Image (cartoon, rainbow, N blue to C red):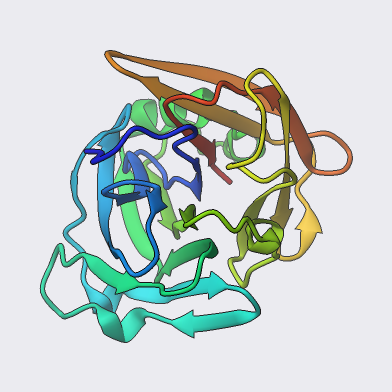
Length: 242
């Protein structure tokens, strides 16, 4: 998966859909030399083990590259072939960020499975709504979107693009640079929904080390923020269902 040892793999930031498993942007590595080709796969799976997403360009609402003060639309860089990956290169040393948002998708689940999902991901609003409207035993139906980002480092020049607010409807923003934070330091992350702090929401943190993935849960505070200690080895994901 990785072609070089990383001091800090990255923080992978995204929101997952109902019971459709995690979805993330998987580059072949996270730290690149100037001009080196970046290849990003769109993965779906569990515990950092996934298969290539079967979607294509037609299912993408937004695919953007943020660097310096520039935002590039990358949607046309993908073909109509299912499972296509994204390739690009940057020739200036800097921090870069790729964001993804897909068009609405639809799922339907049996009531027990739907309740299991809602409970696991702390979606109490939906649980209470179904209970209050005598729908607890009804089929679960939902439209969903995926809002995803990943942060890359090109060369040694660390820039502040990582904390830029994007056009994703749900945006998870690290408040410290993922590639300068010290081992054992506290990472603070802010969650915005349609530009406003997303308060009192369950956030899951995944940390992958060789042979092991840990899963921790936090609740966003009145500012839509969470804080957690980080190790500067392995890969990290911040996961939120809405």
